[in-house]
Length: 498
Length: 88
Image 1: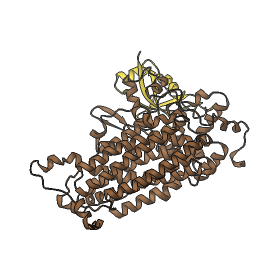
Image 2: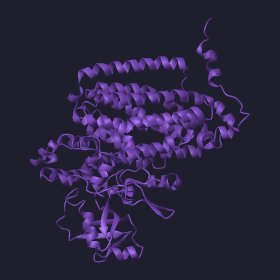
Image 3: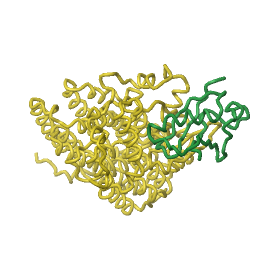
Image 4: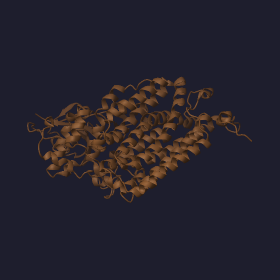
């Protein structure tokens, strides 16, 4: 018997649905899970997936991808390339593994929610592939990290990080709780699929894979490329969802986009910003974080905004201004609080690196150079203890990131709200707006400082905090190059003379 | 006499921090406890400065005032934001 062509049966298989008679539709698809809101049932007939795939096709393609990824992995296990890598690049890969692997695990739950509660069978059908993608990504990260455990215990944090209280992980977990686990299908499609995956991480994976290849880390590059091909496919699910919501509730669509864009950007500053401008070895840098953002992420979002009828977020000008700054603040903060990291951060401010930073960011010296000068003086005076934060930084009650770290030292300002008698502080007027527009969503969460004051951290000092974060001496962060980069500053060479 | 937590921000630094002070501290002492995390660590000392000035909610505070008095008057809460700058 001749098999039907895919197009002869695809629509029937995809649109499989039935009229519920034993339960009420609202009980089977509660609004709190589906996020359907005011969208009329008939509107979902317009939902059209941006790619067509059958289970047979999917398994066949994924099998090939898995075979390719693991073939490279097995070959490189024997080549022992890890010890040849630059320590700053290694920091990038450890940071990526620890901060990403369990996000992939969380995404399995989000995609499972699409499978069960999305308002149309077409979307539910695609959710299956998204869910399988995310299972694959989690397992790939775990397998590749497991191979590297024999070389460096920090790769243990691929699995461990999200089961710890490490402060950066708390910030990341909180964000993905907001846009994945605490989000209904509609919110998750716009906030995660459209904004985070399509707009930020898909592009980031391409850049990170290229950087890893340049740094000689073929294994990591291979892993990222394999994952990126899935991400670029399933991230497309956000488009039909936002198009329908724009027709029926554009205000809600805009709000979801504005919130998730800012929160994604703040994490992007923290992870990708420092990785590109400080951890990537200087001779391997192709473009600065700002150039990358302007050419890829901003362009991508501007196109999305235009295509689906959204407006630019109201804080767009501030966002553009912050591209010059926030990640430098996060670099300074993460390096100064290095015992709270599970990787060894690179300071990235040797004379040559500093010259590059000044060429890419004309205001860098005034905003950040003055602070690094004081740090370098302490390193060279043998007072390294003064280069480590001695008390906790004030933290934002929305992003859980340090207050002051979204812009530069000239824009640190008090942003606060009082809600039900409790005072909340924010890293920016945008994060304050996020909180004020939906305080119940964020009010119950406590940041590390508040947990410290509640007595959860004992003893009540930075040592107690590091212990509470789960960091052990074998993985606790220290300068990637053991401060050798600072020695050249002992001979005064004016920047202008370089 | 009791430990009291504040958010202290030294003007020109890149972040505010959690600062443990004592309700018996004068604001000159509070300023010193905030400044020790910045001056000589992330910003150089300013030899022209004659000390520090404390500002809370846009009000310049008398350095001799005791923190506890302001706490008792409910003008300062735990984790209140306190700005410090060099005084000239």
